[in-house]
Length: 75
Image (tube, rainbow, N blue to C red):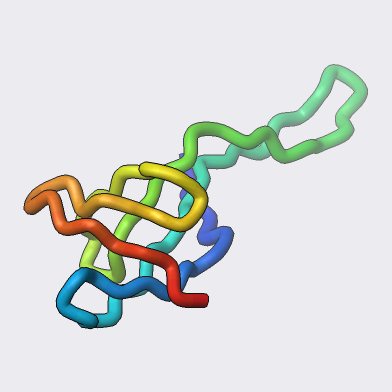
């Protein structure tokens, strides 16, 4: 399925370094029996600009999965 960028969260780690956490979502276009098309949402994932996967802790806190860095939203 193609991925769509939904939003970018401006964040910082505990050392003050800035990071952009992007929210991506799988989607697919499906056609009904009548010929109408609609987009169907799928799984969402958080990633840094470099593609590193990020986990969700709460609505303002994230964790980089490969090194456990904690990121806090600054926006």
